[in-house]
Amino acid sequence: MTVEDRRDSPPVRAGGDDAVGVRIADERTPLLRKGESSSSSSGGGGFGDREFDGASFAGAVFNLSTTIIGAGIMALPATMKVLGLALGIAAIILVAALTDFSVRMLMRFSKAGGATSYGDVMAAAYGDFGRRLLQACVVINNIGLLVVYMIIIGDVLSGSSSDGVHHAGVLEGWFGPHWWTGRFFVLVVTTLSVFTPLACFKRIDSLRHTSAVAVLLALVFLVVTAGIAVAKCIQGSIEMPRLLPKVTTDIDSIGALFTAVPVLVTAYVCHFNVHNIENELDNPADIKPVVRASLLLCSITYIMISFFGFLLFGDNTLDDVLANFSTDLGIPFSSLLNDVVRVSYALHLMLVYPVIFYPLRLNMDGLLFPSSTRLADSNVRFATITIALITVAFLGANFIPSIWDAFQFTGATASVCLAFIFPAVIALRDAPRIGSRKDKIAAILMVILAAFADLMAIYSDSVSIFKENSSPSGMLTRRFGGSGAAAWKG
Image (cartoon, rainbow, N blue to C red; front, side, top):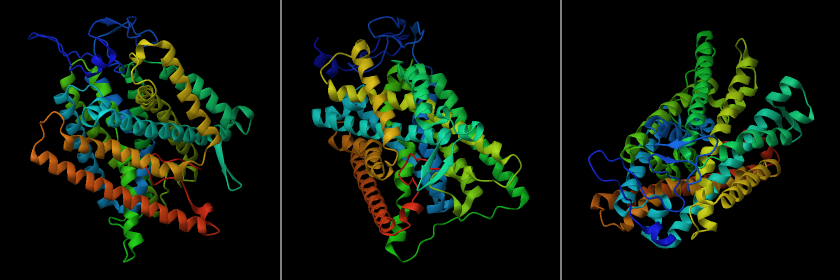
């Protein structure tokens, strides 16, 4: 059987009443059959994994939740400032529901067509062009996220300088300015000691433990923020947060509401990892409850962080709420709490990095080597692509720190395509002929809604950038954020 034959083959499952669901993976699906040793032709999971009997439900939930909860979590309180508390929370719930609907639509058409990856179902609908377009969007989205993650980690730990003002990082605050607390050295150590080892795993299930810790660290941020907000409420130093947006007759103020859309979409985009997680599940039928459990966990976390963050800082909430934690909070142990928040967030991003890196590597391999054998079977190709992508992210974080304006458009557009537009156009194409009239109507509405909201957001961002850049103080007042994974600039 040729590589192309294997790619187009439908899933094969073991027979019998007691059979465990097993799929024949395509050349880039990191699946070991039940009981197969990691030292087999698949290349193994790495770092001592000896046998893989299928991913657990909890491990899948942690991995998908970590895919969802990234740097965008810090931009969510700012959406409350734009939309108001009531409309903002409603928007979070709406986007979560739309994400669940789009994932279910994607998986239904995947199963009907025997596709084992997002690229496969796009290829079934739109041929090789569809697969490559999907892979390009994943690469654009994920490499942008990884660069921003490293920028944030560097800023949090080593500080940043902007317009002649230096904002001290955690390490500099603890130990003072030294060469070993500088950005370059800190990112080198982080890349070599954290990112590279975790990126060497060939199965995403191998990251289940680090993903669990990453979710826990996000909860640490939530608990500390809630505790601070409650303490300030007891002091009587917090005002009632605004429930509705500030809207005037000016069209720009209405368009500004749509700038929250890319934040929410990027905060929930996880579609590029759903197939990878399903392919490794002990029971692939569990993917539906895995998705719903992950979305529920993340939605509760998002709502609480948005609520307490906006409650704490009100209309002074910055585009990245983490920047608010560099000032005196007005309560005892303020400095300690600031450090806890910033360090837990930096550690969270370090552990999110490999989960986002995993589909990035698979899709980059698909773009560069579409007819090659499975990536896990080629150690040379696996290592080369891994090193190259880590190097690109490292160089971007060190030499292109002001990437936000460009990423505002490329990241947001790619995220909207991955989350809503591609699943909808797959349903409209209906290659396996299973779509109903209701599916077609829902898909058309989803494309129109996503395209309109994103175009309005891009227009509003463009107007904002033009106005700020045309004013003498524009670059001083402009902060990073508004599109998804917020970059902390002190």
